[in-house]
Length: 349
Image (cartoon, rainbow, N blue to C red; front, side, top):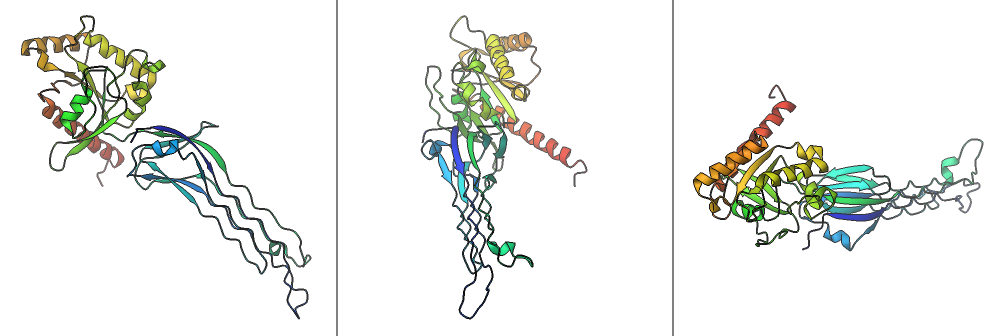
């Protein structure tokens, strides 16, 4: 199935049914009085997060969703039937905005999350409602109100603990294939990855985390160059970023330090929040250098950047250093979760 992470849809809630104008008419009953019933309420439109969905591809075909309208009231004080609600299933991690106003509506993260996005119309009142001691035969009713209509933008942000980013051909896809069971497309040309790939990295029997690989970034990505900027939103939910760098680029003019600075600049242009996330350097393709040269290049990169965060030297092709990286990432995620729980409940209760 093609990966689609954006879609625009129109939703229309049901209209309320009109109130009835009716009088009781039976043999031998004089002046039976008003007996017009109320109209039924219109159905509302809800978005529901479904764990079985992982793309918005279905919304490339179905773009309009409408709830059922309420039925009008009838004589004998019969209230019209209310319309059925319309439930639209979306993937977990879907963010919803109003296209016309730009208003943020909801963020459906967990399976079962449910949000009303269009309110159904209210049913009208029958003439029975207007009976009083001074008006025994009212001929007044009200009409049902129209249901709410909205133009919505659905934006999918994948749910992952760790995100991989870097230049094209840095080895991100190879790394996620080594650490997890993900099977991304791997080739020796840039922009092999055209959509995010998710993989579950298992460290122990009961320890695992989800890793996301997005298309490679290039200079000018924040202005729309390349592919990766379209998918940077998927890294917004991650707790840790792994910046994968080719430690032994083929081109003589390709400096790993400049590449790291380029990606850092694009992150800052895109989002201060994303640029402020914890980020580790993962120097890949170490198998192409001898041990002494690896250390020399590593020290040069750390010194040139003034880097104070973790740095890992790995080889995704041979698996060297990958297991140690996964274990340390798992430990960092668990420490972050414990710190978050303590901040929510300082007393530990």
